[in-house]
Length: 315
Image: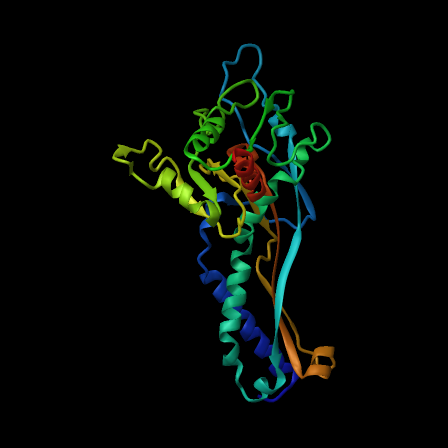
């Protein structure tokens, strides 16, 4: 292919179309079950009501009851993510762009799945990331034993327990008994929270499988069998674990209106072309993401260091 401005524009328009087609064909990963795709926006920061409508309808006596939880807002900053690869000038001259077909598909998959693949890192950071609605009051983290609803009622979503049968029972109980403002069961439909997913890393796989995937243990029925679906996230390389009620998804993901996008560096005077005889093609996406409803998660920050310490103490 002759190198001209017109040919280069056509060339990279074709690569861009292939990229976007591949993005649309990607099947999102399993972690999407925790992620609610929110409205797109151009604003750099948005405040989102942190927990939604909590509590039940009440009898109207002299005036309608108001839910003050909407006073709690979480901020989700807009963050850009991207990746590029080089396209050799010689390959364009030889009409060998087919060599980059797999690179385009892989870049598209990375882009389309990125917000969902970040879920484990959001969970792991929950014990050290300030919960913004309470940052100036209790100073609580996203996962904390120091939360307060508007009005001062305490609640917590953090335990410090290894994954055992008894501790799984305890953590499930904590999320099931959680109450919202006014001491009422949490939505949906004010029937309380129900642990639906047990999340852990590979180091906890054996313990987790014995708890929720084995029907009988020693000839006795396992009452925890299928109480939760099990999710193993390889990004969790420690012993942290938790349970989630995802009937309403706790994590917000809000992309910009343009969604996944491409950019190309095609000018002959560009440094990459002048110095290295290569053009550059980039896939990118900008979005906001935050754990918007941490009350739907009960997390345990147990680590390998805790495990080693407890084992030594037992000896």
